[in-house]
Length: 105
Image 1 (cartoon, rainbow, N blue to C red):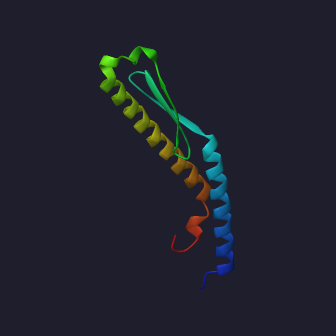
Image 2: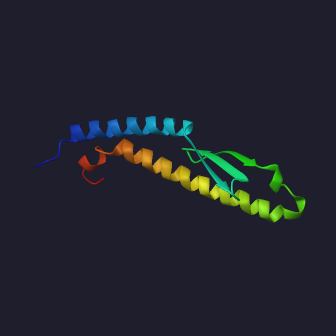
Image 3: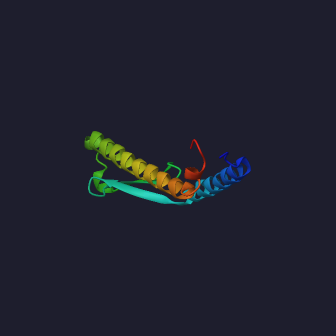
């Protein structure tokens, strides 16, 4: 039985529209991660863009520069992983029910 190409194209357009909507929504969603017991926090949006970094004044010590740098890196790495997971989850939700019906995808 031949697949209905018209129906498949319509489904694909629906997926494209849904993905565009999700991309827009991801820009408004944020996730936050901390390091050093909350002394450094980083916030990113669902588009995996770093939005802010906050550092408590207690960890700003010129003699401990490397420790602060390590905390910033840890917080940013954590928040970027959370942003990636958020993005993947939202994209998966958007395509659920569409892609399994299109052969080859």
